Length: 235
Image (cartoon, rainbow, N blue to C red):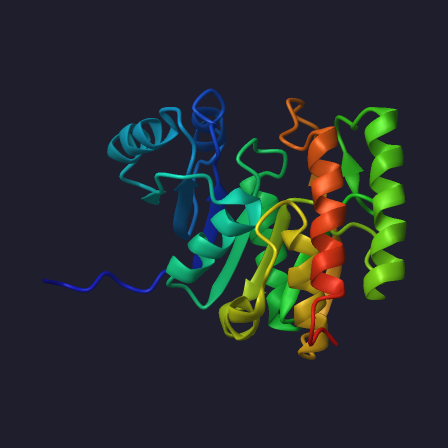
């Protein structure tokens, strides 16, 4: 059996119950020089939709990972990153709020950095459709808490557009505790503690609505971050 060539990039797309939106994501991708790993851990037909898209789009290298139980946002990303085969890896939201061209641009920053994260809150970002004002206030408050708890200076830890050298991310994956939406913060914190160079890059982004992050998730995120930060043996 012939071993498939190593892709240039591996892009993970966590897709929990995304059967209604996932086709739109792939419709917007005209080409991609890498593999697209869709992690399906919901109870709808997202995986079946992805399999049909893969049959119709032989021009794209699409892999669908199926899981019988909910992994959480962090758990889904970890599963995808673990399965990734490229030397440069990343993840993006299934709603397509960050276009594939923007993800490729992020990958280009790995020539000088170990990680590059998209940011909606620094000069140069372009927000075609903004979030509602309440969501923006919640985001800024959350960012302030992150700075206090973890000493991270990033303006936007939660933007769903992040890329890494696989060697850097592989070094910290075994130490990650977070499985939910707080995963992004712990990952950046672990990378920083490991000495990785992380570049925050202005991103072109548009709010797609139907956010998967609910008020109850915000409370769980905060509780999860407190567990991570004050766990026995935490630095």
